[in-house]
Amino acid sequence: MKDLVNPNVLELIPYKPGKPVEELRREHRLERIVKLASNENPFPVPQNVVDAVNREISHFNFYPENDSYYLRHRIAEYNGIDAENVIVGAGSVQLIRMIVSTFLKPGETVLTSQKTFLMYRISATEAGGKSAFIEAPMGRDYMYDMDALYDLVDDKTKIIFIANPNNPTGTMVPRQVMMDFITKIPDDKIIVLDNAYQEYVHHPEDYPDAKEEALNRKNLIVLRTFSKIYALAGLRVGYAVANDEVLAYLNRLKPPFNVTRAAQAAALASLENEDFKRWSASLNVENKAKLYQQLKEMGMEVIPSETNFLCFFPGVDTVELNQRLLKEGIIIRPLHAFGVPEGIRVTVGFEEDNDFFIEKLTKVLEEM
Ligand SMILES: Cc1ncc(COP(=O)(O)O)c(C=O)c1O
Image 1: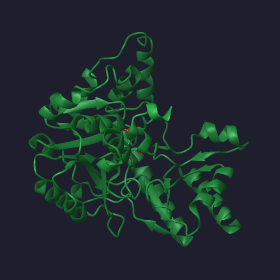
Image 2 (image 1 turned 120 degrees about the vertical axis):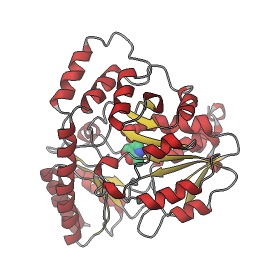
Image 3 (image 1 turned 135 degrees about the vertical axis):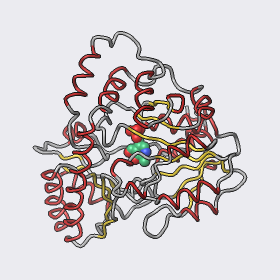
Image 4 (image 1 turned 30 degrees about the vertical axis):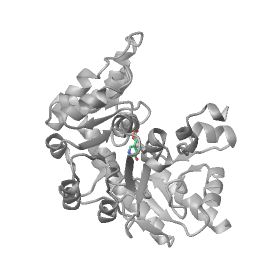
């Protein structure tokens, strides 16, 4: 069988997501399970979104709008741009894959930093094999090192992915540093700014949102998602903003009807609910500060974060720690696959869930 498989697929390490609650419940009889593993919004979907999806249900026998027409126009209006500059995907991961397939030619490479979102590696390997993926060293503060990244740009470099803020470290490249980098990169290389956690950033005035630049440059794509602050991870909606010529090529690879009716309706409604966004952001600020403090008081090194998660270093074997926490009903993300084997990523949840995590972490660390 193996010899039938595309060698690029043999070379890639598949994405392993945080364990779903249902799976852990099947494996262990646990009264309470708290999942803080996938950087989801702990708030349930707001009522106006539930109502919008309910109204859509009776049309589920029909395919959705092929190019997410109304959603695309609303996203454009929301961002003060034209609908021709927006493409909607089934999650931003679908767009990441489409970008790589659209632009990466044989022999060219995808460049990013170490210790970043795994889908850049997976998509690059899928399209061009292991040798198509190049990683720059990460900076000392677990921040993208933009000089190190720039040093690795060469004739073969075609796509540069930057997660900002970064997953799993939670750090952010500030506006000026990012703009200097973008300006230095020639037009024949595509820069992708993945802004999945943009809405959580503490100092938006210092954040390179970059949508203006995406319209004005030939080679910049900005990715956004409804999976995080909009609480729609389960529906899979994300979008890209770019120059209309770039999007015309990306659209060639868009699978037909890629965003479901439920997802389009939910995303549209969620753009009408600014209060929900504000509550989510302010709950995150409050709960993250407490969780950060609790981890610090336990003697952990914790990376200050611009996102809805914290990366910390427990100082013990993280595989064993993870196994023990799972048995206690806690799902977090050990970071081996991300190249941070000494680190754990924990999503900021509701206060009582974070406290439950701290209680179990304390217990497990005492036992280890
Ligand atoms: C940096 C980054 N980009 C993209 C995504 C995926 O987003 P989506 O759910 O829109 O596919 C994530 C999800 O964790 C992420 O951390």
